[in-house]
Image (cartoon, rainbow, N blue to C red; front, side, top):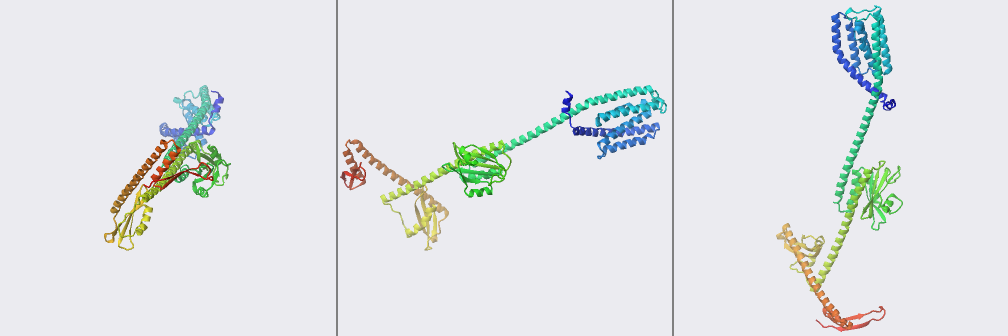
Length: 566
C-alpha cells in the first residue's frame, strides 16, 4: 500500500489524540499498580544499604505519580511530561548508584519510545538527544574519576571507551525504536482511520437497517389496520355512515391533515362534497359545495381522466386548507365507472411510496364498500317498491273480491262499529294491538290488526267488562298469534279464489281461441267471438266495430248481436 493511500485513510488528529489519551490512562493505571510494590521494595533496599537519603525521593516520586493518576484536572501534556520525568529520574538514580552496571540503558531507551508514542516523532528525537547527552555527561564524570561507585557494581564505569560503546548501542537502539515507530505509527493511524470508518459505516448501515425495519414494521401495522378497516366497512350498510367513517378514521389513524370524499351524480357530470374530516371540512360539506367533472382543477381532472394525481402545494396555496403542502386525489372506480374521489392532504413535505400504496388499498376498500351500499340502497328501494305494488294489488284484489262476493264484516256486540273503527285506525297504522278503556268506563276494547305479508287486511275487536280486568300480556300474545294465522288463512283463501277466477278466465279465453282458429271466415270469427264474450260477461248486447280509417271518418258498424240472458 502506497503512502498516498495511507494519507487517504489517515485518522483525524482528534481521533489519534483520543486514542493516545486512552492509552495514557491505561499506562498510568498499570504504572500506579506496579509503583505500590516497587515503592516498598525500593525503601527496603535503601534501608538495607544504608542510603536513607533516597527514601524520601522514592516517596515523592510515588506521590507525584498518584496525583497525576487520580487528579482529573491534570492536562494531557502534564501527564506525559510527568511520565517522561519519572522515567528520566529513574534513569539518573540508576546510573548514579551503579554506573554502567545499572539498568540506565533500559530507562533511556524507554524515554524516546514513550515520547514518540504520546508526543510524536519530534518529541522522540528530542528524547534521543537527551538520552545521548545524559550518557555523555555521566561518561565524562565517571571516566575522569569525579563520580565513582562501588567496585562490585562498577562494571568498567571508569573507562571512557565503555561509555562510548554503551552510548552507541543505546543510540542504535533508540534510532531503531524511533524508526520502527515512524513506520508503525502512520500505519497504526491508517488502521485506526479504517477501523473508525468501518465502524461509522457499520453504524450508519445499522441505523439504516433499523430505520428500514421500523419503516417496514410501521407499514405492516398500517396494512393490518387497512385490512381491518376495510373489513369493518363491509358491516356498514348505509352510504352516509361509510363516507363519514372513512374520512374520520383515515385522518385519525394515518395522521393526515385533511381527508375529503366526493361522489359523482348519476349522470357523472358533477362531484358533490359528501364528507370531510375536521370541523372546518364539515362546514364546507354543509354548504353543499360541488365541482364539475373536467373543470380546471385537480379533482375535475381526476374525475375526467380516472388517473391518480399528486401535487405539491406552495404555502397558502389552498384557501380552504392553508396548512396543506401536498395533495393526492385517488379516483374511486368500480367496473370501470368513476363514482367518486378520495382527496387527501398532508401538512408534511411529501408522501412516500408506502403512503401512496396504502392510500390505494384503502381507496379500493372504500370503492367496494360504497358500491355495496349503493346496491343495497337500490335493492331496498326496489323491495319497498315491490312491497308497495304488492300492497296495492292486494288491497285492490280484496276490494274486488268483497264487491263481487258482497262479503260483509262479522260483528257481534253492543259497541258501535264507528267507535271500534276510531280505535282500530291507529292500530292498523302502527300494525300493533291496542287495548283501551271506552268512554263508558265499563268496557275494555282490544283491537288486533289482521296483517298478512305486511299488508293490513282488517282487524279483530274484543270487549270485556271492567270487572274482569284488562287483557294480560300472555292473552294478547295468544290473540295476536291467532290473528296472524287468521290473516294468512284469509289471504290464502283470497289467492285461491283469485287463482280459480283466473283459471276460469283462461278457460274462456281458450274457447275464444278455439273459435278463432276453428273458422276461416272473418265474419264467422267476429260473430261467434262477440256472442261468446257477451255470454261470458252477461251483457245484453255486444257489438264489434272495425275502424281502419282515421277517427274523423265515420266508423261502420260491422256486427251487432243480441246475447242471451244467462
